[in-house]
Image (cartoon, rainbow, N blue to C red; front, side, top):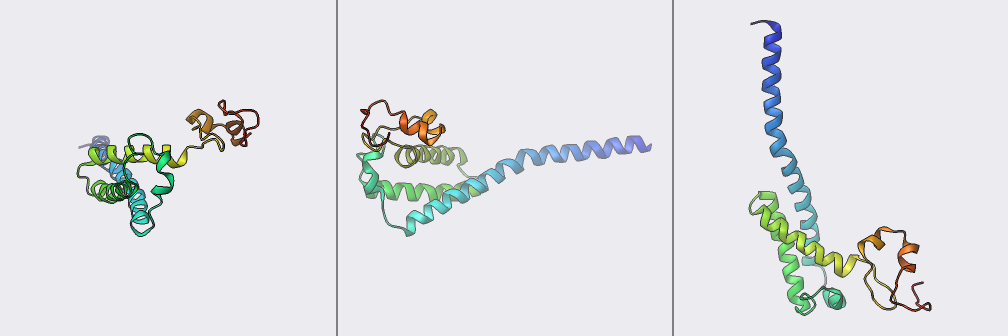
Length: 148
């Protein structure tokens, strides 16, 4: 076998191994990182005080009618169980969807800015604008709005 043929054989073997690793490694790293984030959040809820009652009114429907204690327990349980299942690679689609949904609810209830006077939720487009632009763009308040 010539040197060129041997190099081509080695290259093909290396390429096939790298392609096989490329199908496994990135999803595994993503599952580990996302699992860690949800695990940490679940542990904070597990060992912390229930503050959901303070923001119950900000939850989107139908979550605003679920008792705060039940919401707290469900969020804690899904974050901890979901993290473990992501790490193990079991039920990843189900738990990834559940955790994504949980994240949407958390974003709507806690992380989206609201008008200080009327409580209107600023849209994601407004949220991406500068703070001054977002604060001055509340269209539902009068010119005397405290957030202008």
